[in-house]
Amino acid sequence: MKYATGHHRVRHAAAPIAAAKVPLTGDEAYYWEWSKHLALGYADHPPMVAYLIFPCMGTANPIWIRLAFLVCGVIATLAAAGTAKRITATSARHVPLR
Image (cartoon, rainbow, N blue to C red; front, side, top):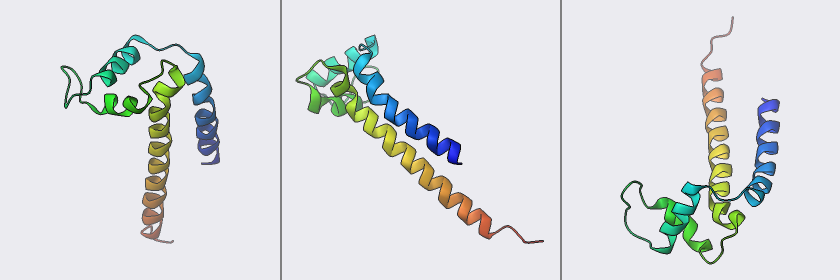
């Protein structure tokens, strides 16, 4: 378990560096364009991607365009870890002792 925790810490520490250095991909640029024209939906995706990028619309810097997704990744990891902790604690209580 400590390995996984350490791995995720390194990954989340390295992600902002990569997000700042790597240029936008075609999809990311496409989503950035969506954020300039908000709608309730788009032809091929729901609108949340555009809504997450919208606060950083004034810049073309990749780190700012990806910031909300970096935060979402940290939140999802913490939620998954909390869920795993609850599941293992609950199942450990129901294991019969021999």
